[in-house]
Image (cartoon, rainbow, N blue to C red; front, side, top):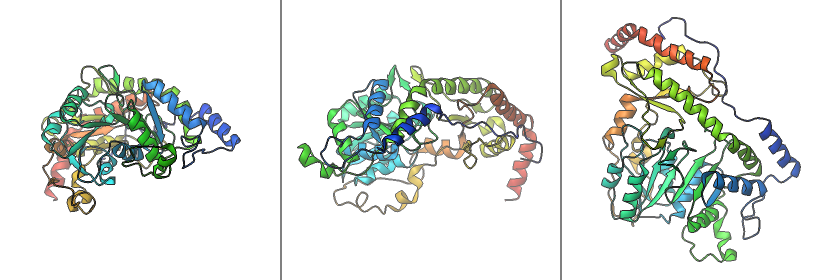
Length: 434
């Protein structure tokens, strides 16, 4: 960053897990001529084609859950789950401010209002104490996010939900095979959603999977996925609340890829955990760096490795430190335009214009909404501290990273620490320059 020679210039290996198995699976679908078999009416093909149904069956057996429903993204899965939980205008849903935007947008799709609870400063998932503080007579559900691969404190969440008669939706986009006290995430609450887009643990390009043990929720998700308003009459569905449908359907090619990818997931997860543990053990010895906490009884599957950085110990600011490490290392193949190391993780969602301006007339300004939700700066102090001051993340623990690659990562950190005095001078000059 200050003009020296970087630790490494050779680009990091790609994280492509697509192999010959997936290629052959797609070829079989192409040769069949049947790229999607959905029919948007009550018909034997309402549930999709053979690859979609097989993928759903495999996923359900893999996680030990009654129902799995394939969709075209985790985002559409979130929307479908909000609808399937009978959430509508005037209702509130407790959500995380420290995640991808779709988790908070999902209630808005059905005219409900997202209410942001704060996060746990150790694992960055929703803090059950903050959840309980945000519950009102209008609250209908809690949407937890198992962020970065670590599970939320689900015992406490489920106890609160039971006490207040609330649905629990688990966003598992970053946490397939993450477990909480021996239970797979996505099987503990009322319904769970997993992501299968290209930079997740396994992928189908774009895609998602919904899991539930509740047959009513499963049916509603299927209706919302595939033009439910055209199906309920023929299907003789009695409860049609929120069953107007979208097109959230996964294709046969994506499902064929997913079937093969699922077989690889355990090995890919184990490599992530091994790499992350190795980096945590060494980097955690550096003053001011706090490696990810893994709570007792939990399995962390490391979508990203999120560290905390203490400026008062290290002597330089987090952003300067991260910029210095990034300057020592190259990009990763297939991710050339996307940084694999960054600060903050996700900005507090309530600071976005959609919440600051509250222009969504069917939710914030709905005549049926009797609340007065706040989105002011300072609403979630832990989230803001983590984003603006402490957290930094990287993806140097991906399965394709070898011991040789990890050593380069470690050497980059070590080099920066050896030159902290220069970074302090650099920061001082920037400060004086305004």
